[in-house]
Image 1 (cartoon, rainbow, N blue to C red):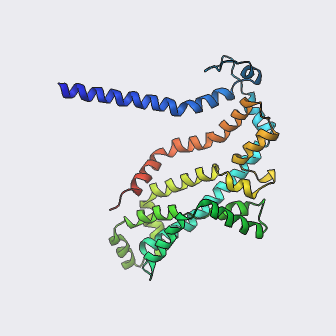
Image 2 (cartoon, one colour):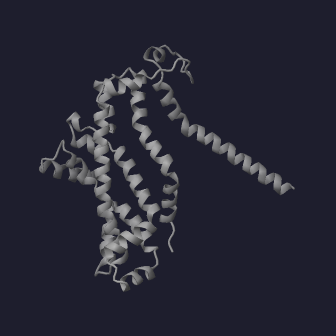
Image 3 (cartoon, helix red, strand yellow):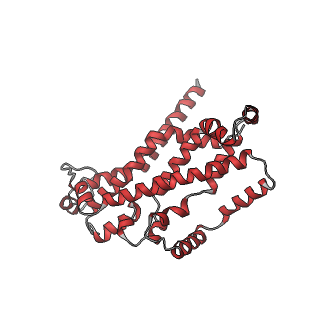
Length: 280
């Protein structure tokens, strides 16, 4: 009886902690949305911030697309995200397959050297990429934005570990049947590792959507701004520093696609991450 009461108390405490933690995590999002539906006059008249509004307005969202070129920033970000993610998958999937299944001299050494690239500080890589792109006259171009992000050592490692978890007997049986490596990769390995592949795609999309430092360095033409660095332009030359509700509306519009993406694919993300942590 005492053990049941202790277990029930522990469960209650866990749920209370989870609720408190959820409120702490979600409150900034609630405040962002709440501010975005307040009028400029209403927001400035609040000497003490209010946690609700009786006169919500959607005018700030209309201004986000009419006052500033937010639609253009969205289009640039979409092109950058889709192109970068697609090219990256074309690079990392064959690379992961080669390290996981193909036998060639020095494979382990090459892979170890490849992993050592993760030890290089990001700042050094950015400097090298910047000099290269400038020398190639690719500033203010989609190609200049995309090229430095078409591969990832971490994603190759993650996918390689998943490929290696597939029994060797499947590969040997496929070779006996005369199946090519490319066909085996497309028809067998990718479908089996689908949760991890989807997870990598989603994580890369989120990474591209939130990319700030590199686009800020490589673009000075507003026609090539992404939504991340376009926010700063909006703040400086669009709504102005004082129009916080309009700024919050723009931030909400930018954040919604990622939130929806995560909610739709959250189960696949969890499955892919958990599969990447197990082997065999």
